[in-house]
Amino acid sequence: MASDLGWRVTVADHRPGYIQRGGFERAERALHVDPDRLPEQLPLAEFDAVVVMSHHLATDRKYLGHLANVSARYVGILGPRARKERLLADLGEAGAALRVRLKGPVGLDIGADTPESIAPFDPRRAAGDARRGDRRIADEGEARRTVGSPWLRCRYNEVRADAGPLRGERSGMRSRVALSRLLLLAAAVAILAACAPMATQRQATQLGREAGRDPVIVVMPFDVELSELTAGGLEEPRAEWTTAALEHMRAALEQEAKRYKVKLVDYQPDRGTPEDQSTSLELQKLHRAVGGSVLVHHYLPGLQLPSKGEKFDWSLGPAVATIARNHSADYALFLFVRDSYASAGRVAIMVVAAIAGVGVPGGAQVGFASVVDLKTGDIVWFNRLVRGHGDLRTPDAAAETVKVLVSDALK
Image (cartoon, rainbow, N blue to C red; front, side, top):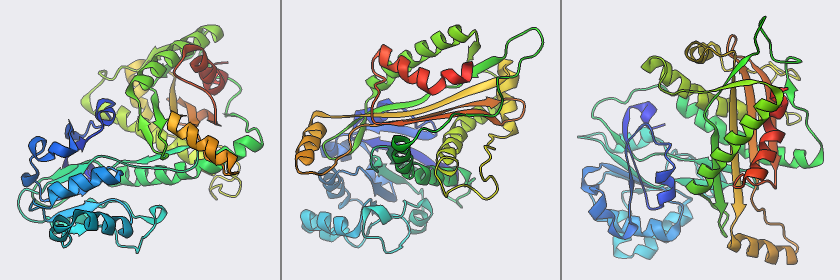
Protein backbone atom coordinates (compact mmCIF):
# COMPACT_ATOMS: atom_id res chain seq x y z
CA MET A 1 0.00 0.00 0.00
CA ALA A 2 2.77 2.44 0.89
CA SER A 3 4.58 1.66 -2.35
CA ASP A 4 1.45 2.42 -4.31
CA LEU A 5 1.44 5.86 -2.73
CA GLY A 6 4.99 6.58 -3.85
CA TRP A 7 7.01 5.66 -0.74
CA ARG A 8 10.39 3.96 -0.84
CA VAL A 9 10.01 0.78 1.19
CA THR A 10 12.18 -0.95 3.78
CA VAL A 11 11.18 -3.91 5.95
CA ALA A 12 12.71 -4.71 9.34
CA ASP A 13 11.71 -7.73 11.42
CA HIS A 14 13.17 -9.64 14.37
CA ARG A 15 11.82 -12.96 13.03
CA PRO A 16 14.08 -14.36 10.30
CA GLY A 17 11.28 -16.51 8.89
CA TYR A 18 9.43 -13.44 7.62
CA ILE A 19 12.52 -12.04 5.92
CA GLN A 20 13.66 -15.37 4.43
CA ARG A 21 10.33 -16.22 2.81
CA GLY A 22 10.47 -13.07 0.69
CA GLY A 23 7.41 -11.31 -0.65
CA PHE A 24 9.00 -7.89 -0.38
CA GLU A 25 9.84 -7.36 -4.05
CA ARG A 26 8.80 -3.73 -3.92
CA ALA A 27 10.84 -3.03 -0.80
CA GLU A 28 14.08 -1.10 -1.05
CA ARG A 29 15.58 -3.41 1.57
CA ALA A 30 14.53 -6.12 4.04
CA LEU A 31 16.50 -6.49 7.27
CA HIS A 32 16.59 -9.06 10.06
CA VAL A 33 17.12 -7.09 13.26
CA ASP A 34 17.67 -7.83 16.95
CA PRO A 35 15.23 -5.77 19.07
CA ASP A 36 17.91 -5.32 21.74
CA ARG A 37 20.38 -3.92 19.19
CA LEU A 38 18.00 -2.03 16.92
CA PRO A 39 19.93 1.31 16.92
CA GLU A 40 23.10 -0.53 15.84
CA GLN A 41 21.39 -2.24 12.92
CA LEU A 42 18.96 0.38 11.65
CA PRO A 43 19.75 4.12 11.33
CA LEU A 44 16.64 5.28 13.13
CA ALA A 45 17.79 8.93 13.08
CA GLU A 46 17.30 8.95 9.32
CA PHE A 47 13.58 8.32 9.60
CA ASP A 48 10.91 10.98 10.06
CA ALA A 49 8.27 8.45 11.01
CA VAL A 50 8.21 4.98 12.52
CA VAL A 51 5.44 2.38 12.78
CA VAL A 52 5.84 -0.52 15.23
CA MET A 53 3.78 -3.57 14.25
CA SER A 54 5.44 -6.71 15.62
CA HIS A 55 2.20 -7.73 17.40
CA HIS A 56 4.26 -8.92 20.37
CA LEU A 57 4.00 -6.86 23.55
CA ALA A 58 7.51 -7.43 24.92
CA THR A 59 9.12 -6.82 21.53
CA ASP A 60 7.08 -3.68 20.93
CA ARG A 61 8.24 -2.42 24.33
CA LYS A 62 11.87 -2.80 23.28
CA TYR A 63 11.28 -1.05 19.97
CA LEU A 64 9.50 1.87 21.62
CA GLY A 65 12.23 2.18 24.24
CA HIS A 66 14.74 2.81 21.45
CA LEU A 67 12.41 5.18 19.65
CA ALA A 68 11.91 7.40 22.69
CA ASN A 69 15.31 8.98 21.97
CA VAL A 70 14.75 9.35 18.23
CA SER A 71 13.45 12.55 16.67
CA ALA A 72 10.94 10.89 14.32
CA ARG A 73 7.97 13.19 13.84
CA TYR A 74 5.53 10.29 13.58
CA VAL A 75 5.62 7.14 15.71
CA GLY A 76 2.73 4.70 15.33
CA ILE A 77 1.87 1.53 17.25
CA LEU A 78 -0.46 -1.30 16.22
CA GLY A 79 -3.26 -2.23 18.60
CA PRO A 80 -6.00 -0.65 20.69
CA ARG A 81 -5.49 2.41 22.88
CA ALA A 82 -5.44 0.33 26.06
CA ARG A 83 -2.42 -1.57 24.72
CA LYS A 84 -0.65 1.68 23.84
CA GLU A 85 -1.25 3.04 27.34
CA ARG A 86 0.10 -0.12 28.92
CA LEU A 87 3.28 0.09 26.87
CA LEU A 88 3.79 3.75 27.75
CA ALA A 89 3.30 2.99 31.44
CA ASP A 90 5.77 0.10 31.30
CA LEU A 91 8.39 2.38 29.69
CA GLY A 92 8.29 4.90 32.54
CA GLU A 93 10.29 8.05 31.70
CA ALA A 94 10.92 6.85 28.15
CA GLY A 95 7.18 6.44 27.73
CA ALA A 96 6.54 9.97 28.99
CA ALA A 97 9.01 11.33 26.43
CA LEU A 98 7.36 9.35 23.66
CA ARG A 99 3.72 10.02 24.55
CA VAL A 100 3.26 13.23 22.56
CA ARG A 101 4.47 11.59 19.34
CA LEU A 102 3.04 8.08 19.72
CA LYS A 103 -0.07 7.52 17.60
CA GLY A 104 -2.18 4.51 18.40
CA PRO A 105 -4.03 2.82 16.95
CA VAL A 106 -2.22 3.59 13.72
CA GLY A 107 -4.50 4.61 10.87
CA LEU A 108 -7.70 6.59 10.89
CA ASP A 109 -9.23 7.72 14.18
CA ILE A 110 -12.51 5.81 14.24
CA GLY A 111 -12.67 5.41 18.01
CA ALA A 112 -11.38 1.85 17.90
CA ASP A 113 -10.64 0.15 21.21
CA THR A 114 -10.75 -3.55 20.34
CA PRO A 115 -8.56 -5.69 18.04
CA GLU A 116 -11.52 -6.33 15.74
CA SER A 117 -12.17 -2.62 15.13
CA ILE A 118 -8.68 -1.24 14.71
CA ALA A 119 -8.31 0.76 11.49
CA PRO A 120 -5.37 -0.06 9.19
CA PHE A 121 -2.16 1.95 9.08
CA ASP A 122 -2.53 4.79 6.59
CA PRO A 123 0.74 6.10 5.07
CA ARG A 124 -1.07 9.28 4.10
CA ARG A 125 -1.61 10.13 7.76
CA ALA A 126 2.04 9.48 8.53
CA ALA A 127 3.00 11.68 5.61
CA GLY A 128 1.01 14.51 7.10
CA ASP A 129 3.14 14.36 10.26
CA ALA A 130 6.38 13.91 8.33
CA ARG A 131 5.92 16.45 5.59
CA ARG A 132 9.40 18.00 5.64
CA GLY A 133 12.79 16.78 4.46
CA ASP A 134 13.63 13.25 3.30
CA ARG A 135 10.52 11.44 4.65
CA ARG A 136 11.12 7.99 6.02
CA ILE A 137 8.86 5.57 7.82
CA ALA A 138 10.08 2.40 9.50
CA ASP A 139 7.71 -0.45 10.19
CA GLU A 140 9.17 -2.94 12.63
CA GLY A 141 7.67 -6.27 11.59
CA GLU A 142 4.28 -7.53 10.59
CA ALA A 143 0.76 -7.36 11.95
CA ARG A 144 -0.99 -10.72 12.20
CA ARG A 145 -4.52 -11.58 13.24
CA THR A 146 -6.04 -15.05 13.25
CA VAL A 147 -9.80 -15.46 12.93
CA GLY A 148 -10.93 -18.99 13.78
CA SER A 149 -9.24 -21.72 11.82
CA PRO A 150 -8.49 -19.94 8.51
CA TRP A 151 -5.66 -17.47 8.47
CA LEU A 152 -5.71 -13.79 7.90
CA ARG A 153 -2.65 -11.65 7.65
CA CYS A 154 -2.41 -7.94 6.88
CA ARG A 155 1.15 -6.79 6.38
CA TYR A 156 2.22 -3.21 5.98
CA ASN A 157 5.84 -2.70 4.98
CA GLU A 158 8.32 -0.35 6.52
CA VAL A 159 8.42 2.55 4.15
CA ARG A 160 10.59 5.52 3.28
CA ALA A 161 9.03 8.29 1.26
CA ASP A 162 10.71 10.51 -1.28
CA ALA A 163 10.32 14.23 -0.78
CA GLY A 164 7.46 15.78 -2.68
CA PRO A 165 3.80 14.92 -3.19
CA LEU A 166 2.68 11.36 -2.74
CA ARG A 167 1.30 9.76 -5.86
CA GLY A 168 0.44 6.25 -7.05
CA GLU A 169 -2.28 3.84 -7.96
CA ARG A 170 -4.55 2.86 -5.09
CA SER A 171 -5.88 -0.34 -6.63
CA GLY A 172 -3.30 -2.40 -4.75
CA MET A 173 -4.46 -0.96 -1.45
CA ARG A 174 -8.09 -1.67 -2.26
CA SER A 175 -7.33 -5.25 -3.28
CA ARG A 176 -5.45 -5.91 -0.04
CA VAL A 177 -8.28 -4.51 2.07
CA ALA A 178 -10.81 -6.51 0.06
CA LEU A 179 -8.84 -9.72 0.50
CA SER A 180 -8.63 -9.13 4.25
CA ARG A 181 -12.40 -8.89 4.43
CA LEU A 182 -12.84 -11.95 2.25
CA LEU A 183 -10.55 -14.12 4.31
CA LEU A 184 -12.25 -12.98 7.48
CA LEU A 185 -15.43 -14.46 6.05
CA ALA A 186 -13.60 -17.68 5.18
CA ALA A 187 -14.39 -18.76 8.73
CA ALA A 188 -18.00 -18.97 7.66
CA VAL A 189 -16.97 -20.99 4.62
CA ALA A 190 -15.29 -23.43 6.99
CA ILE A 191 -18.54 -23.84 8.91
CA LEU A 192 -20.48 -24.47 5.71
CA ALA A 193 -17.87 -26.91 4.46
CA ALA A 194 -18.36 -28.98 7.59
CA CYS A 195 -22.11 -29.03 7.08
CA ALA A 196 -22.58 -29.73 3.38
CA PRO A 197 -20.48 -30.45 0.31
CA MET A 198 -20.03 -27.75 -2.32
CA ALA A 199 -19.65 -28.65 -5.96
CA THR A 200 -16.65 -27.66 -8.02
CA GLN A 201 -17.52 -24.87 -10.43
CA ARG A 202 -16.91 -25.84 -14.05
CA GLN A 203 -18.03 -23.60 -16.88
CA ALA A 204 -17.37 -26.18 -19.62
CA THR A 205 -17.70 -29.95 -19.66
CA GLN A 206 -14.04 -30.14 -20.60
CA LEU A 207 -11.23 -27.81 -21.57
CA GLY A 208 -11.42 -26.74 -25.19
CA ARG A 209 -9.26 -28.69 -27.61
CA GLU A 210 -8.11 -27.41 -30.96
CA ALA A 211 -7.95 -29.86 -33.83
CA GLY A 212 -5.01 -32.21 -33.61
CA ARG A 213 -3.68 -31.21 -30.19
CA ASP A 214 -4.46 -31.21 -26.48
CA PRO A 215 -4.78 -27.92 -24.59
CA VAL A 216 -1.64 -26.44 -23.05
CA ILE A 217 -1.91 -25.27 -19.45
CA VAL A 218 0.71 -22.96 -17.98
CA VAL A 219 1.18 -23.52 -14.25
CA MET A 220 1.51 -20.21 -12.47
CA PRO A 221 3.75 -19.99 -9.38
CA PHE A 222 1.97 -21.62 -6.47
CA ASP A 223 0.83 -19.11 -3.84
CA VAL A 224 1.50 -21.38 -0.87
CA GLU A 225 2.57 -20.72 2.70
CA LEU A 226 2.82 -23.07 5.69
CA SER A 227 2.92 -21.80 9.24
CA GLU A 228 2.94 -22.97 12.83
CA LEU A 229 0.11 -21.93 15.11
CA THR A 230 1.65 -20.76 18.39
CA ALA A 231 0.13 -21.27 21.82
CA GLY A 232 -1.21 -17.73 21.62
CA GLY A 233 -2.90 -18.33 18.27
CA LEU A 234 -0.41 -16.48 16.05
CA GLU A 235 0.74 -18.06 12.83
CA GLU A 236 4.52 -18.07 12.41
CA PRO A 237 5.56 -18.78 8.80
CA ARG A 238 7.90 -21.75 8.41
CA ALA A 239 10.03 -21.29 5.30
CA GLU A 240 11.40 -24.83 5.35
CA TRP A 241 7.90 -26.32 5.49
CA THR A 242 6.78 -24.11 2.62
CA THR A 243 9.77 -25.12 0.49
CA ALA A 244 9.06 -28.81 1.05
CA ALA A 245 5.36 -28.33 0.34
CA LEU A 246 6.04 -26.63 -2.97
CA GLU A 247 8.26 -29.51 -4.09
CA HIS A 248 5.71 -32.14 -3.03
CA MET A 249 2.78 -30.33 -4.63
CA ARG A 250 4.57 -29.77 -7.92
CA ALA A 251 5.54 -33.45 -8.13
CA ALA A 252 1.97 -34.48 -7.33
CA LEU A 253 0.58 -32.15 -9.98
CA GLU A 254 2.87 -33.64 -12.62
CA GLN A 255 1.63 -37.10 -11.71
CA GLU A 256 -1.99 -35.98 -12.05
CA ALA A 257 -1.20 -34.41 -15.43
CA LYS A 258 0.31 -37.67 -16.68
CA ARG A 259 -2.69 -39.55 -15.41
CA TYR A 260 -5.07 -37.43 -17.50
CA LYS A 261 -2.60 -36.84 -20.38
CA VAL A 262 -2.64 -33.07 -20.00
CA LYS A 263 0.32 -30.96 -21.12
CA LEU A 264 1.58 -28.60 -18.43
CA VAL A 265 4.24 -25.94 -18.91
CA ASP A 266 5.93 -23.97 -16.15
CA TYR A 267 5.47 -20.24 -15.98
CA GLN A 268 8.77 -18.52 -16.87
CA PRO A 269 9.07 -15.16 -15.08
CA ASP A 270 11.83 -13.90 -17.39
CA ARG A 271 9.80 -14.19 -20.60
CA GLY A 272 8.39 -11.16 -22.38
CA THR A 273 9.02 -7.49 -21.87
CA PRO A 274 9.46 -5.92 -18.42
CA GLU A 275 5.88 -4.69 -18.77
CA ASP A 276 4.70 -8.24 -19.52
CA GLN A 277 6.53 -9.55 -16.47
CA SER A 278 4.99 -6.88 -14.26
CA THR A 279 1.53 -7.65 -15.64
CA SER A 280 1.94 -11.36 -14.92
CA LEU A 281 2.96 -10.61 -11.34
CA GLU A 282 -0.09 -8.41 -10.84
CA LEU A 283 -2.32 -11.15 -12.29
CA GLN A 284 -1.06 -13.56 -9.64
CA LYS A 285 -2.05 -11.06 -6.95
CA LEU A 286 -5.37 -10.44 -8.67
CA HIS A 287 -6.15 -14.16 -8.62
CA ARG A 288 -5.69 -14.19 -4.85
CA ALA A 289 -8.20 -11.35 -4.48
CA VAL A 290 -10.70 -12.73 -6.99
CA GLY A 291 -10.49 -16.22 -5.51
CA GLY A 292 -11.24 -14.81 -2.08
CA SER A 293 -14.23 -12.99 -3.55
CA VAL A 294 -15.50 -16.24 -5.05
CA LEU A 295 -15.24 -17.98 -1.68
CA VAL A 296 -17.45 -15.38 -0.11
CA HIS A 297 -19.85 -14.18 -2.78
CA HIS A 298 -20.48 -17.47 -4.57
CA TYR A 299 -20.41 -20.04 -1.77
CA LEU A 300 -21.93 -18.20 1.19
CA PRO A 301 -25.74 -18.00 1.16
CA GLY A 302 -27.10 -14.47 1.20
CA LEU A 303 -23.85 -12.84 0.09
CA GLN A 304 -24.23 -13.25 -3.65
CA LEU A 305 -23.51 -10.10 -5.64
CA PRO A 306 -26.64 -8.62 -7.28
CA SER A 307 -24.92 -8.55 -10.66
CA LYS A 308 -24.09 -12.27 -10.51
CA GLY A 309 -26.73 -13.98 -8.43
CA GLU A 310 -26.32 -17.74 -8.75
CA LYS A 311 -24.20 -17.46 -11.90
CA PHE A 312 -20.52 -18.31 -11.77
CA ASP A 313 -19.20 -15.38 -13.77
CA TRP A 314 -15.70 -14.38 -12.71
CA SER A 315 -12.72 -13.18 -14.72
CA LEU A 316 -9.14 -11.94 -14.44
CA GLY A 317 -9.66 -9.76 -17.50
CA PRO A 318 -8.02 -9.53 -20.93
CA ALA A 319 -4.54 -8.87 -19.51
CA VAL A 320 -4.08 -12.66 -19.29
CA ALA A 321 -3.25 -12.53 -23.00
CA THR A 322 0.26 -11.60 -21.84
CA ILE A 323 0.67 -15.09 -20.36
CA ALA A 324 -0.72 -16.76 -23.49
CA ARG A 325 1.59 -14.80 -25.75
CA ASN A 326 4.76 -15.60 -23.82
CA HIS A 327 4.00 -19.27 -23.11
CA SER A 328 1.98 -20.40 -26.15
CA ALA A 329 -0.66 -21.71 -23.75
CA ASP A 330 -4.44 -22.00 -23.82
CA TYR A 331 -5.13 -21.93 -20.10
CA ALA A 332 -3.44 -20.92 -16.84
CA LEU A 333 -3.71 -22.84 -13.58
CA PHE A 334 -3.57 -20.71 -10.43
CA LEU A 335 -3.34 -22.24 -6.95
CA PHE A 336 -3.56 -20.64 -3.51
CA VAL A 337 -3.14 -22.53 -0.20
CA ARG A 338 -2.52 -21.52 3.39
CA ASP A 339 -1.81 -24.45 5.74
CA SER A 340 -1.20 -24.12 9.48
CA TYR A 341 -0.23 -26.67 12.13
CA ALA A 342 -0.75 -26.43 15.86
CA SER A 343 2.45 -26.24 17.92
CA ALA A 344 2.92 -28.39 21.02
CA GLY A 345 1.92 -25.42 23.15
CA ARG A 346 -1.21 -24.88 21.10
CA VAL A 347 -2.15 -28.55 21.35
CA ALA A 348 -1.76 -28.38 25.15
CA ILE A 349 -4.09 -25.38 25.30
CA MET A 350 -6.60 -27.16 23.06
CA VAL A 351 -6.61 -30.19 25.36
CA VAL A 352 -7.04 -28.12 28.52
CA ALA A 353 -9.77 -26.05 26.89
CA ALA A 354 -11.57 -29.18 25.68
CA ILE A 355 -11.61 -30.55 29.22
CA ALA A 356 -13.20 -27.28 30.31
CA GLY A 357 -15.76 -27.55 27.53
CA VAL A 358 -14.29 -24.73 25.43
CA GLY A 359 -13.36 -25.16 21.78
CA VAL A 360 -9.98 -23.73 20.72
CA PRO A 361 -9.17 -23.95 16.98
CA GLY A 362 -6.04 -25.67 15.77
CA GLY A 363 -4.43 -25.63 12.36
CA ALA A 364 -6.40 -25.48 9.11
CA GLN A 365 -5.94 -25.95 5.40
CA VAL A 366 -7.57 -23.25 3.26
CA GLY A 367 -7.11 -22.98 -0.47
CA PHE A 368 -8.58 -22.54 -3.91
CA ALA A 369 -7.53 -23.25 -7.48
CA SER A 370 -8.63 -21.77 -10.79
CA VAL A 371 -8.24 -22.53 -14.48
CA VAL A 372 -8.36 -19.34 -16.56
CA ASP A 373 -9.06 -19.21 -20.29
CA LEU A 374 -6.18 -17.15 -21.67
CA LYS A 375 -8.25 -16.01 -24.63
CA THR A 376 -10.98 -14.39 -22.56
CA GLY A 377 -9.63 -14.12 -19.03
CA ASP A 378 -12.68 -16.00 -17.72
CA ILE A 379 -12.33 -18.47 -14.85
CA VAL A 380 -13.68 -21.62 -16.48
CA TRP A 381 -13.02 -23.91 -13.51
CA PHE A 382 -12.77 -23.24 -9.77
CA ASN A 383 -12.45 -25.40 -6.69
CA ARG A 384 -12.02 -24.61 -3.01
CA LEU A 385 -10.65 -26.50 -0.01
CA VAL A 386 -11.46 -25.57 3.60
CA ARG A 387 -10.77 -28.19 6.23
CA GLY A 388 -9.13 -28.84 9.57
CA HIS A 389 -6.85 -31.64 8.39
CA GLY A 390 -4.30 -32.38 5.69
CA ASP A 391 -0.52 -32.03 5.67
CA LEU A 392 1.55 -30.56 2.85
CA ARG A 393 4.85 -31.34 4.55
CA THR A 394 4.95 -34.97 3.41
CA PRO A 395 4.74 -36.28 -0.18
CA ASP A 396 1.76 -38.62 0.23
CA ALA A 397 -0.38 -36.14 2.16
CA ALA A 398 0.54 -33.33 -0.25
CA ALA A 399 -0.46 -35.56 -3.17
CA GLU A 400 -3.86 -36.12 -1.54
CA THR A 401 -4.37 -32.36 -1.20
CA VAL A 402 -3.43 -31.75 -4.83
CA LYS A 403 -5.75 -34.52 -5.98
CA VAL A 404 -8.67 -33.12 -4.00
CA LEU A 405 -8.01 -29.55 -5.07
CA VAL A 406 -7.05 -29.72 -8.76
CA SER A 407 -7.39 -33.17 -10.32
CA ASP A 408 -10.93 -32.47 -11.51
CA ALA A 409 -9.58 -29.59 -13.61
CA LEU A 410 -7.40 -31.97 -15.62
CA LYS A 411 -10.11 -34.47 -16.55
